Every structure is written in C-alpha cells, then in structure tokens.
Image (cartoon, rainbow, N blue to C red; front, side, top):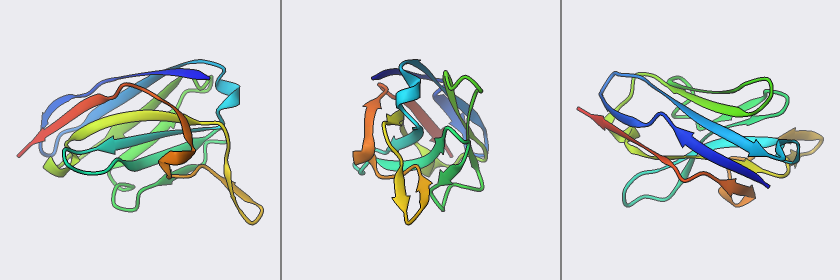
Length: 130
C-alpha cells in the first residue's frame, strides 16, 4: 500500500501552465505503475497519463502534446506538467498507483483504466478561466 498526496493545483488563465506534484510514501516497489487521472464536474473520471518503473509513458491521445508525466528517480514524487491550459482542462486531478502492469502479448504496459489502480490521492483542483 502507498499513500499519495497531490499539490500544485490552482486557478490559471487559458494559455497558462501548472505543474502538479504527488508525493508517494509507503511500499512504492509494490506499485509498478503510477498515473494521473482527472474528473471534471458532471463527467466521469478519465486517465491523463501513466508512467511505469521503466519510465515508459502512456498518454490520453488528446493530451500528449500539452501534458507531460514524470517521476523522480526514487519514485517518491510524481509530476504532471500542464502547458497551454484550456478551460476544458478544469477538473479535479488525482494521482493513483497500480500494483500490476497489464499485458498485450509479451508487452507490459501501465493501463489507463482506473479499475487497475489500487491507491488514490485526495485530488487537487485545477481551474482554467478563459
């Protein structure tokens, strides 16, 4: 089990940038996949990006140009750099950890499906005004 605490959210005008952080504590070796999800008002939670212990990343297609997921070498902090923010990026942003990878044939990857994620932070709010 790991504990996750997000920070870095806030209010920003369209075109601006924010960098979210998620401090990870506990047995990080048991969680080979980390991810950012977001949930806008009235909408379902959706995956933003995932990252594995090998650094391989997996993005939602619509966000890969503007958003970048990363982690420090010790995997104690997860980041999400968000550039050129748009009002539709307004949402609560959550970091999450999964205890397993998924497989496509012999290829292991970190899923963007939330049911595979065991641990969640409390979220940090991002509000983008036009």
